[in-house]
Length: 185
Image (cartoon, rainbow, N blue to C red; front, side, top):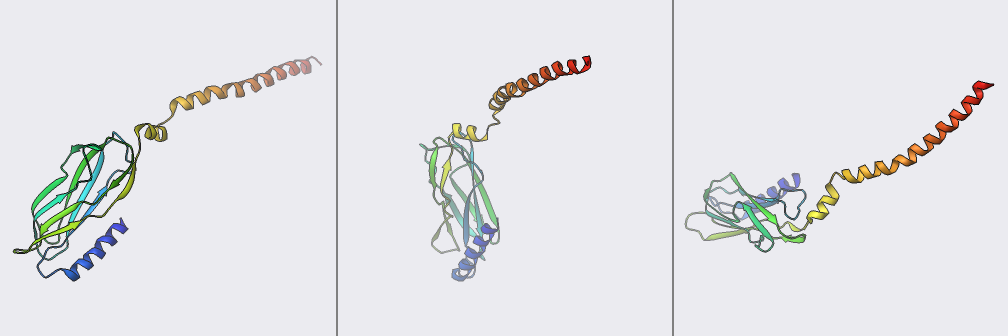
């Protein structure tokens, strides 16, 4: 979390140096909300736009082309979103839920934002952070790692019974045999 805030602060400082007075300056952060990404389970991706400029950003378009139909199924949300206006000093968030169809390493590329920084100016383009290559576990691998393994523990318990019961039976038989001889004397 602190790394995220430091990144926003540094980008904001750099943006304030180059931004003209009254212009909007947007920062786009792309974040995967799942700690473990698995094939066939929902993956939540959050986009947060921060307006650190002095003016409102208009005609804001956010697009992310990294979720191809051959690799992901769109469950909820849209990968292309539009806002009419984002006021200065505010932020907006958008969440997309997709379902990975394949396992393996996947390169999560940057999302693109385009907006008009002030009236009469040209369209400004920006990119989000690049998440890089993340592993998508197969469902079989995920279950192997994170399952409760009740069957395995049950079999382990059953296999341990002979190694506990047999020595106890030998001890009990021996004790019974020698304790009767001690009582007779």
